[in-house]
Image (tube, rainbow, N blue to C red; front, side, top):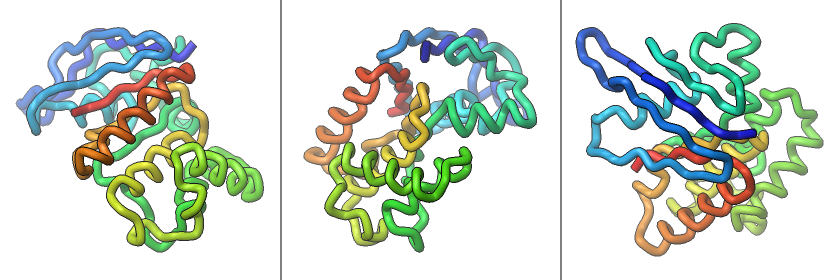
Length: 196
């Protein structure tokens, strides 16, 4: 039950309306692509879906849970367990190796160090990085860093995966691999929303 429903989402910055009444529905296993030029509100809408930014009006329902208006422990639980985010700039921690980067959301969600480490290794293997576990992000190509960012977003097995321009910093060969990986993640029963 990972489906996503948005109804009338509005987000303003001062007098400027960035997201104006956006509504759509994505079934489990589906992908929604947010298309538009830079500055049109794609990242803002993703931030609302991830509950990083509260929508000023409207409704966001993920798997039967209303996200708009969540607060306190319920908001923290949604962010930790229901949504994974692949940031445009990767947002990897340079001082941590790949395993440690992927462990971060799991530890925040309450997983033990041992469980988080084993799961991080498995998720990194899933994205094709089993041979690079002890490397730091700066030792990787852009495509490899994007795969680490995807692994981190997958670390808690969240049913909703948000990807903000996941191929923006990649060459055409790397783009094909990342897109294939994202498609397979939706096929596994997630909802995927991609800004591009």
